[in-house]
Length: 178
Image 1 (cartoon, rainbow, N blue to C red):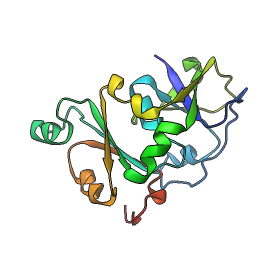
Image 2: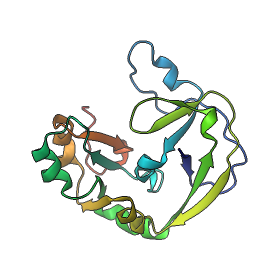
Image 3: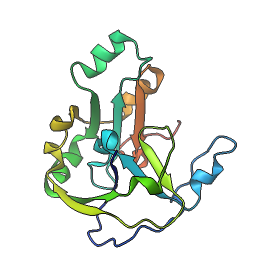
Image 4: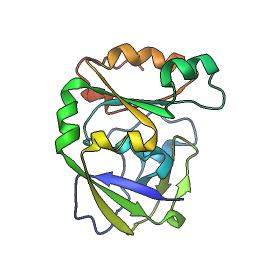
């Protein structure tokens, strides 16, 4: 298994644990997830971070419990879909991000959308610069879908799909009621 961290910084020699910028409401016993950690994503879910850092996006995929009709309706033949606002599309084709590979043995699995955390300093194994993010999705079986607004996608949280929203506070007309 391979773990990654994505950054716009090309010169990270080591990742130091740090608290997240905007703490989340965590279930009892999981408050520590807002504390100082190094975060990583597994290779199956790395498509979630093939975006400029502040780009709002909605990502969906089927779970074993997803009804077949929902899977067909929302995913078709793709394993996942990534929604992004139209005005971010140009940035997906011109910006560069850096994918740092991290030693898996330093991390613990959160059993949540491919996320892993380490509680101590982590030195990356390798770094790869990635440009033209828009070309990275299809080889991963992910359909990149460009929409005028992410707001109509709020109803996806009421389906049997796994839905992740990242940086939604930056979406053009998102209202924080979730």
